[in-house]
Image 1 (cartoon, rainbow, N blue to C red):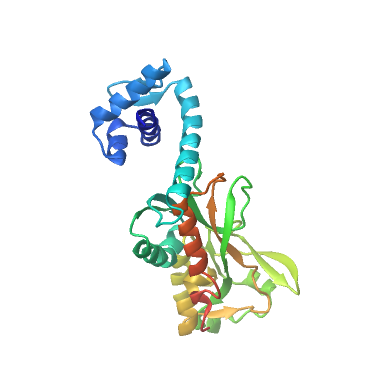
Image 2 (cartoon, rainbow, N blue to C red):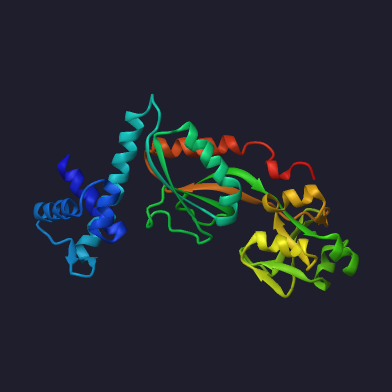
Length: 302
């Protein structure tokens, strides 16, 4: 297993950029980390890393070796986990990416419940609206909202994500209530730039997909800020219902154009293809599928 330890340390150094960070991840010292990589280089008869007092950088052969050995180690770990834990509780570390707003407001409680049920699993969760490269950045799974385009990844559908057009009574009393989607062109629209094509709002009218160009002076890359602006009477907002649900139930904003329903988005767990999906990752995905089964809590009562 010594060669395996050397390979794991090399992968950690490549991912984290230093012996100290790699050593901390694998629970050893910086000196031991350096020795393991040096031993690997000696065994292979090549230099994998260029070392200086300020930085580490891979050689060309080191980069090529990293690309291959990382995939092989993932396959090894997945196979080992599937056999070792087939009849027991899954263990290990899961690195997960999720969008900020949904992650903090809706996903975090589900992950906390999962952590209680699986005390041997370590969760490393990154909340970011950036679409991460799952494979290159070492993520086990990502939670994504929208329409998926990367066919190299496997996606598990968790739930539909409804989107509503809504505004406050204060705004509607002043500007009038639109009864047809085309009338939104004459309204002040609050633009959430996290949406794909944020200035063209999609609708489904009598089963036909249409889009409407909209405009407004407020642009936010955040659904919560868009909701706050709508509550303040500053315009009509396009809002995911996982954010708008409490305000819709309370009546502080009103849904509009319900006969011109916006096509729902999807909530997905996305992960790289592997011959043997790690037991820990399968456990998390199955948990989330069960957690989000049925009508989402945020769509009830309004």
